[in-house]
Length: 476
Image (cartoon, rainbow, N blue to C red; front, top):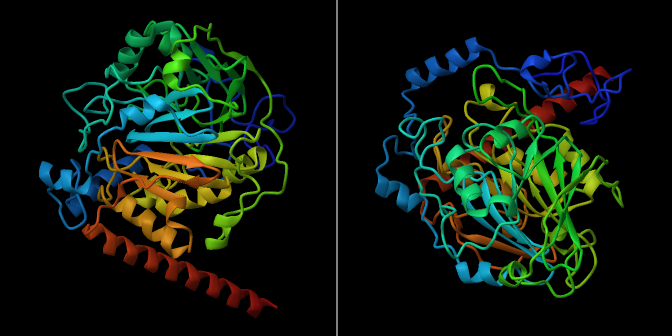
């Protein structure tokens, strides 16, 4: 939903002109159905029913296989998918040991689900373990790769909290919520956007913390000597809807998790053996101001610049950023300014075609790279891809397109990767220190196709820039 009658001087979460109301809160929405929210940027455009029907018509005309397809293969078999997207065995021993001191490790479970360990806590984003992302399990998009984690494994490290970005079915899965709630109960805290608390309470989830944009919650670390991690909800350009009556009645967004690494971090097993009353006290406050002006990733030499990144054994904070679902918009530069750099970001790169329809709500690989640069992420992993067929692009296109975009930008290969399902990334001192298995797999037809796409897009952008510069000179 677009904010039509308010501005916030370009700052997400700012106050609407002349009011005390946040710019992304809709005035007088009809509280019988709850609050209502909107996107306060000109980059967002509301999609109409007519446009939805036009997309459907175009898909039929182009004979798009809505069950999923690969580059050069409109009707892939299960074996084709297994070759394109190998399911990597989860390294349970590494998860039991925890990340290196001063580091972060993250396992890509699939789609937007990431298991993260940092600063003495273990948490998961948008847990969706079921086969389908739908309101029923006999219809709707079906996984092409099994979930790397189901939430029932006995070797799964104890979870401290969950980050929930919004209520779409590929992010909020009822069965997965029930699985985790049955297993952890009151020991697990759920951080959710404004307006979703009642849904979780309806599922008998006891510990729910609703957050608005830029609102933070201090989460105690078990066995951490009173040290805390801070969960801050940050803006994203998207929307919410779970039924036909609740469009934009709950908020959407991403999260930045900030932690100061303890001098001797306890392993997850050690932390679990130390009883602690876990609570989350929400304090309404702005995210921190940047310590220095915003900077963007530059080709190769940026790999050597670590001024904004935590050093092992130092007291500098570790930061993990879960972007959630979003279109590209000005807020990412603001996030970079407020937090002064991110150690590891999970950035959506898929579900973007056709661009005329999806651009306001989903970033493609090139825009995902722009997000990573805007927030000054030292390392990023691509998510929201290669799991369910939600839009028109081939499922193996986004990871290949990302790899081509990183190469075209002259950035280090390890600065932004797409992990294989079940694989983990380990980040220390702003660098990817392991050698994870990634997508696309070697020999994939998507590699050459994506390189051609990125080159063509780059040539088109260069031509447009040259034309604009020439036109400007003509006017002088």
